[in-house]
Picture 1 (cartoon, rainbow, N blue to C red):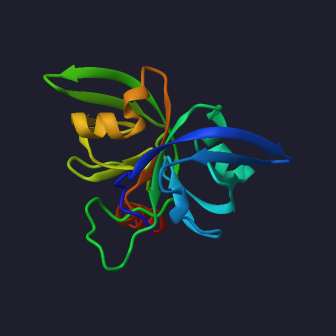
Picture 2: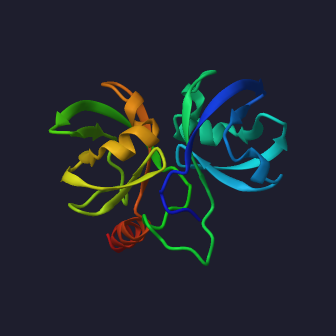
Length: 196
């Protein structure tokens, strides 16, 4: 379980392919605090730490994960949003995030907004995968508030802190991002589909 509040940007150091799996070696400042078998979100995707080295750790993404997320597009040097799992005694500063990416979206536009930025995203609409005005959405693991919600698209406003401390500063038109829709909305959507 995560909150969508990014701790740090990690850097991909190495990528190894093994059958349908991809092993990602990532560096970060808190590597000495990590443990084998620990869950950590990478661009919003929950992955398990499988190896620890002095300057990097390794996680493995399976074929299903690679098809539903942007992790298969990473290259050596890519910036990755990192978040360790929530502590039960901590504050929930974002919203409830599972680390289960639903699908990807494409960045359609990045507009300066007097010191901040407005990002426009489009995605393939599916039952239960929708946004609502002022609702929550997770983009590359970042908990955000939806503005200008429409079928198959939405916008988010990004403040300078988020722009600098996540990989949002690397987004441009055409960038593929990971989406995790709000879990309550997904349950309601599934329920409504079952009533049809």
